Image 1 (tube, rainbow, N blue to C red):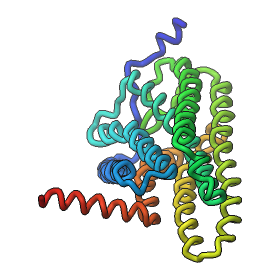
Image 2 (image 1 turned 60 degrees about the vertical axis):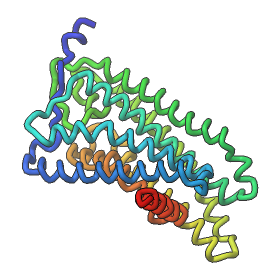
Image 3 (image 1 turned 90 degrees about the vertical axis):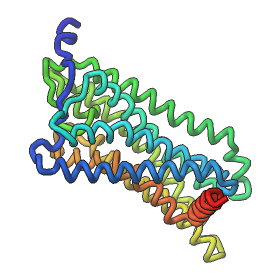
Length: 314
């Protein structure tokens, strides 16, 4: 214990792309722009889903939950990245780093489970439309969303606590943009096989479990869609479900590559780019994917804007 206490630094140096200092300015503005769009898009989705009476179905309850989750997810990392990219100071305090690691892992795991839950919702909506309001009642929706948050929290407490206990032997350089568990594990000065194995095994369950649910759900959904006699009905079902599939691909693709490979098998710069993709680009893209492919959301946005303009004129 004494050795571990002595090895804890006061702060960490986030290396990011320090090998390419010319990237700091363009990356700063790219992140700032994407963060603004993320805030705008997800807040708009939340407001529209809450204020429009036509968007009170379980689908939009889960979409609101996803938008809130994405707001928290990107806010956990992007402000710190902007601070480090905007000046010479690349540091983050030890407490700040550990807090970021706990929260980031919690939210990331929660999103894995929530996306699986949303696939279940789509399955019931398309394959059992007459019983949809009864099966996916408000109580069940809240229980499913709460379960996703609790599973993410439990996994974060387990994984992050195991990582925090690793001695660092004075090592302060974290080869990443922010504090993420795989990067923190690599900083340890002891054998980390148990940590890496635990992370990989739990990540496999948390990624492949919901992903399997998604694939099974959409196999049934595809069969049901092809049986819809109306071309308009098939198109509406396809647009709604394809939006969710796009979001799933954007989130799960980089996550599988990063968390389900043996440690050290991938170039660190590639891991950084992929991590930026799913923690910055995906939360920004989600509301636009759902909005651009969903007539109900676009109509609700128009009604909300119309009411806002009319209220100003009055």
